[in-house]
Length: 263
Ligand code: BT5
Image (cartoon, rainbow, N blue to C red; front, side):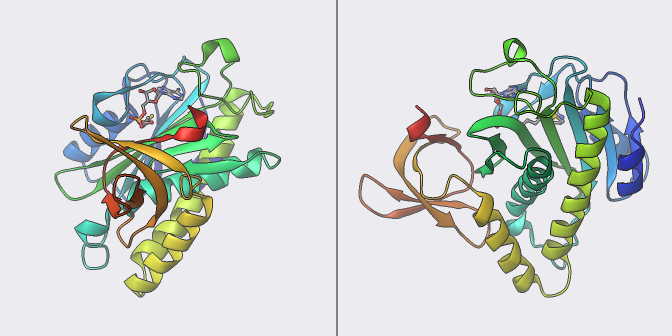
């Protein structure tokens, strides 16, 4: 399998014919050797993909992209409390790359980590912090899954949205486009005046985030829940929800969001 466009956009590309999880591969690689920022591990046959909170990412062989990118936040510019922006900028970068392939569709980011096409999940992002302070940004994208292979009813694939490229070529075009976009937003987040960078990223993520303005249910990792209206993102990327219960604003750092109009 060849990834020529990706090779031009990445520091280094490790292509695996089959692997349990590209995020795990990256963590192992980074533990045993120095890994440059924007090194990528990629496979179109990931057999045990992980989602957030112990969930699974299901990717039928040969029809999905699994890619993990290593980022090295500069601690003097991007304080730890700002790391909440990392999955959001990855989602933004992927939404832009996907958007170029399906320009007649609505591509949006569902806070915090899903890329939706016409309201259906085509991509998920899983970011993980490594012991040395670097961050693995994993993305899974449904490329050429037919409807009967979709793992959950609210999913979609690029093929189902009208993209007809073969899976391998599509994986390379998409991953290269994503890396170029990620490079740009990562630069905004880490370079120059940090406050300016955050302002830019805040505006760009907010512009594609279809959660904002929606009636939502937030389910927290402990199982508790609240309902309200998604109001905005705060300075560290948390979703602020105007609660039905008392009209107050609650900043949500980690939780699952249901857009209630899709229920
Ligand atoms: C995610 O988690 O969506 C993050 C997925 C990240 C996968 C990438 S692939 C490369 C890297 N290596 C890994 O091991 N992981 C990363 P979460 O928000 O928790 O969503 C998981 C939920 O999405 C599941 O419980 C299903 O409901 C749904 N789901 C699973 N597979 C899907 C698919 N192919 N398409 C759409 N939805 C899916």
